[in-house]
Length: 574
Image 1 (tube, one colour):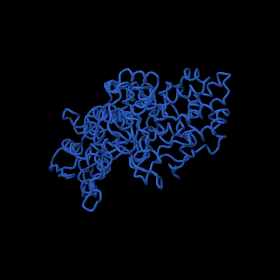
Image 2: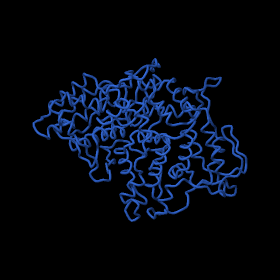
Image 3: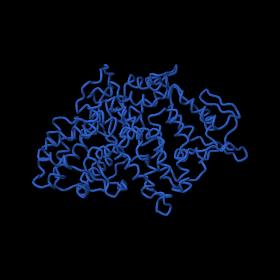
């Protein structure tokens, strides 16, 4: 598909407005196109021609404004609502962050699936189909009180990718639920424990073929599967090329990047990941079928299937005869201690929450927090997350066109639900995400491959970003159909036409004065980023919608939300 040219200032509009009217009232659509052209045509944050210079460090503001608090919440959670704004301004950024990281885990997806009856093998789809996992994850992301934990887990899920599209297994609903819980449990712990838990999870084992991986057999020509060995290096820990602590490439004498590993390293590491398979056992409570229960356990070692020979990789040698458990420990220790891992992980976490193009100094500060949390502990994820969000580059308002990131479609949807207090009419969170006209083009744990929905180094071809040596990962899933699909999807969602509904009492009261309504949405959705000119244009468009009835007032609210959430000032999170 053709990519959106980020140098263009003209937005994509629905090709067939008549189809969009099925989701959005005719009166609103009559006002939207002109307003959208005017209010959302400018302000694109991706057409810079030069990288952002590293700003001079400044202290975090002592007294937070509402806009500063909302901007922080846009990075650390799902944007702002009156309750979260008050919590951040009352507690301060560090206080809110510490409180969020200390919160207990919310109800597990496994418990939710059982509560909704998805442990019943006679229910259609529970064994080989969806089995309610999409509802479980939307319920979690829309309603769980541990907002930062969920935002951080979503970020990790786009690095340590497991996709339901690659899980042709029975009871995958419980495998997926367990995988999310693995990330939840370890997201604020130590990276080494996270790496171990991800490696041994049944979902990852199925997705990247470690489950059932066996030692070589000369008689049959069988060799250990190399899939997980390759991806645990390339995507989960060290990356393809050697890095400096600030994330910049190390170069050889010819000025070329230096590869971190070769095929011999892959083969040596592949031998480590042999002999592991689903654990045995049955649910002592009798709640889950045996296979569903085992999908929620770490994989277990069958020693007879583990490669007994010596294993050599990345300068590490594991002697012949070393047990499978010890081999795994040594291998994961080597990846954890590798010089690349801190900066490789640091940059991607910054990209997921704050900005697509962090400065080398920003990456280095976060990498150093990974290396040493201040108490000589390596891999402390609380220290890493704090460094990502509290860094001066994250906290200093930056209007440079090369700072910030495109908000992901699924994050925008969750923000809408969190901002306005979404509830679910059927209790099962069946949002629907299949229509080509209304698709978000994204949903959690549904990436097309292990490389996620987009690559961290992606830049649109032939665009100013590429010429400026900048990246915009999220633009890899942004094209004309996806832009139209997003607007249609939101248009058919904000008007409470789906099973997920919100309460617009506050917004309805403001709708008699369009400028007040737009200002309210600007603060809570866009952290005050929408320009005065665009707010004026939006207000004028909203004012053309009759407000003499409750339905008219709500139409104003619906239109205002779609305008704000379709505007470049909102879409580019700065």
